[in-house]
Length: 366
Ligand SMILES: *Cc1c(COP(=O)(O)O)cnc(C)c1O
Image (cartoon, rainbow, N blue to C red; front, side, top):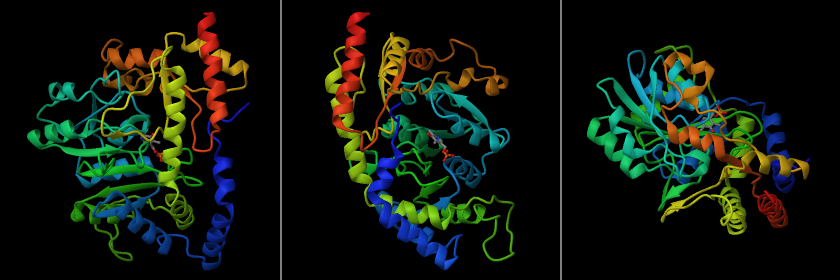
């Protein structure tokens, strides 16, 4: 079976640098909140043009800490999309707030900004747009709505490191931006890791304290926080990969462009609005023959994945929210037809061609 994402290929290209870096950290025996985390936070600040960046233990924790920093909790509502990874909603539930879903746009798969205002109540405190698959949500419109209603914006940019609208990067539009460095993400480490970014220095300080047991200094505790720190080894690895990130994203875009060229006549392929820079964490197509395509690819040892087969409002774990089938027809329809094809920076162009040919032949036969 071919890999869906070949993490080995990326490792092989930077192996020496990585091993030296990890060895240095092992020799220093400084594993938590040392110079690599500090330098990585500085590098992220400059890469994203934000005032502060705080390394945390995961993308899920980044979202959780962001909500905590705004004192969002019981009795509060947070608007988000039903078409995202489960963690977006878990974070809202961790603080005791209520997730309120808004259907998605059928072209971008992101929250439909024209439907947000209908869901705002006196209890609404924040909006969490997710830049799904690496494509920026409609941040100009969403920022405007947040401003009009006095809401906070926490961007879930876990899939969108390096994505942008014009020159402004995903994660830098809202009050807080949250990132994940889970190994398969566009910027991935060798375990779990995450980052919170913001232009509000007071909020940044609050998150810095919250990520370290609510402690602004040794054995002083201002509040009950979390143990959620990015560790030195992950930060060291990420510093090396950050130097290559733009090139990795460019490569992903090249693969996406090829898929689209081969397939756009026979399935629905992703569209890019003017000025939007997609980083293709995921490349997905829409077809009513999804299952046939998936099975045919499998017979050729090519994996494909359905992101996401069940929108969150229909997940068993969230049944207590009281949603039912038909509540978000676009998300439900997309979930039935969507299929994601292998994409990673080192994916050979010939494989994109082969995969596309298999899909074309399979659809011409059916
Ligand atoms: C990966 C992901 C997360 C969670 O990140 P972790 O680092 O795995 O905790 C949150 N939201 C989205 C959209 C993701 O893709």
